[in-house]
Image (cartoon, rainbow, N blue to C red; front, top):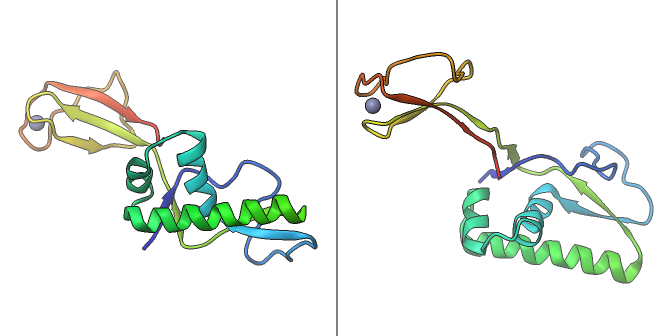
Length: 135
Ligand SMILES: [Zn+2]
């Protein structure tokens, strides 16, 4: 199962699976990083965080638990945390339109506020421009 994450960690600790692993460091998966970000940084509930990552709550809980172990070990043993990949997919924002009549939402990379279009489902012209940022 792929885990959805917003972006790789925005710091120099990020490296790829093929980079040599530096001395005095331990690794954390991006999924673990993302679990901590959603739960402890954005403060989502565990259920919402699990939904965001497209995993079940027990799975999320396991990922978070193993992230805590990495952080604990790093603190106690004075190691750097390196975040590496895993089976993940980066989430993209949603850009498109929504229909006021039938509530249908569809994606359109070229969507804009100015561009008018009709709902592909019900044909209504009462559509609104819709952008969703990944959380
Ligand atoms: Zn519609």
